[in-house]
Length: 91
Image 1 (cartoon, rainbow, N blue to C red):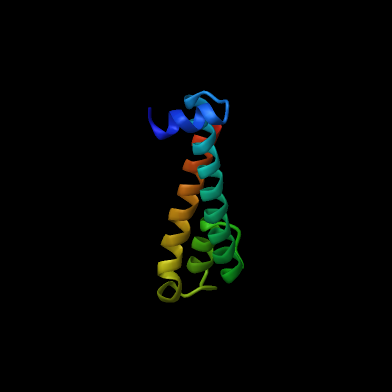
Image 2 (tube, rainbow, N blue to C red):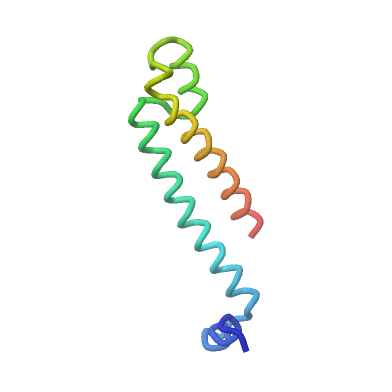
């Protein structure tokens, strides 16, 4: 008997339900971390999202060389946030 089967039995749950709930909890925790990281970057630059970041660079309010790394980090974080949200909805 696997650990999941044993734990599910002890918690009076089906193993499939235990896995589903565990995955959901993990994704929600991961989403909170990603959203916190997004918040810190958007606050740092006074923006709401990567599109506004791009606009501020193009308009000269932000220097590309100073914000280059953060721009790509924010872009990746926003993509990760959407992916996580999509999978949470599926659960």
